[in-house]
Length: 162
Image 1: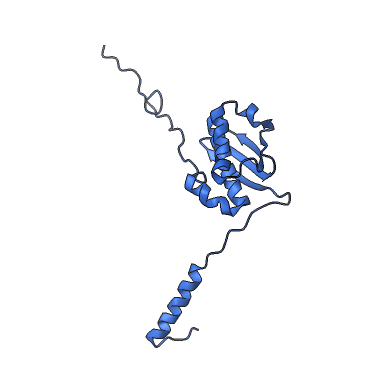
Image 2: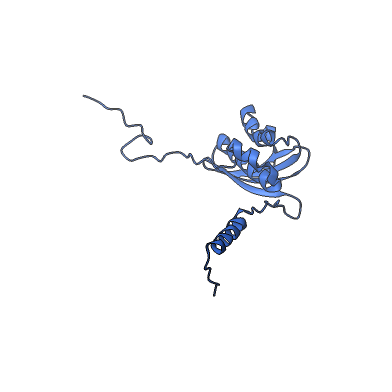
């Protein structure tokens, strides 16, 4: 089956070979479809975003509408642009996203998460910057469920002394 090792030097040689094999790190390969796009799914609260990115002029389309029309608040537009500024690739990619569920804030967070994941799939060298900023991690905070005998998740009914 396997040859027996009878000396300490032989054992050290085998151990060095095993360590050398495990230290070799394979570089990440870009993941792109036939049209040169990268796809990722982003999630935040109850919102789920499907995001495609491709090289372009920086045009962002969400559910068939322009970014300014769908996310009217400047804060939400800023949230969507954060992955590009952190990665240093502003106005280099076109984004096409479809979002379902949740409110506008959750949807903006879901699109941001999807853009970050798609960027690191398209160009693996951007991963360290996006990872350090925390954009690749799904924000697991969700609404707490309502409990019986209470008005909301934690709020009780008003107590009456008389």
